[in-house]
Length: 360
Image (cartoon, rainbow, N blue to C red; front, side, top):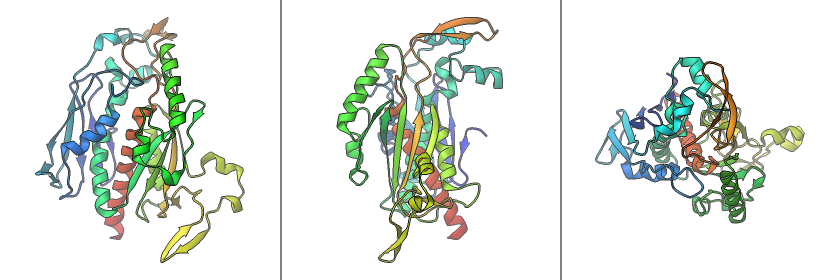
């Protein structure tokens, strides 16, 4: 149950970081949606390790295979299974973790909950689990675009530690985001961010930051008024990603510094469409999308696995120290950008189908 996400568009992910394979099963995808392995591979390549010098150097092609639910490039309406086989496991780098807990990692909490865990690579707690999410997100985005031609989801690195990108929202494009290895639309900030990541990596350390996401072309009326508010669903989706520690939408915490008159988004008519002069609501009001851009931010903590010695305890409660080995990201944000976008697709697609089922 804990590995299933969604109500009508349901995604189940499977696999461990150093197991045989990683993947997903998607149930609830409508039929006749155009889909092939090449579509999914584009996004998996944005997520995969080894894509640049500032990410983990684990060598995985992350080549996907669609096992079911698609014939001649179109979905059947039946469950879609996508799998990626692991190729570059180095489980010997995790021997110390069999008995010693890595600080701020999932080792202790998994042991406390289950009494057993997949030691190598962190098992299900590894960001490698998100392969299934990214693959499912591609399928979801295809469903959304059948109903909304102008739908577009653009996530980017807004800041890493104290370095913040400057952007002009109307000029934001996928091309400018992908123009550098850190995935930020500000080329000057990108150079500083890359230098910072390389510096902390050389010190055996790590850094975190913030990813901002702008979602355009979301149909009006998605989301439920009470428990399943669209922003609540997005918050759950984002905070389910590895290394996330915070979520805010629209004005977020800065809205607490405003008065109601300053914060309210006044309405006006643009032709026959209701618009807002400002967008401090972040595209969602009363838990329901209002047609404006959805804008939110996600905070990612510094990577827990660092290559410096730290104090810890063993499974038997004995004080010891540990120094991680293996290949790890000194900053997860560049590879987290497609993960954030994929979770947006899953939420929007699910609520699109729910809206269609309830209201036609």
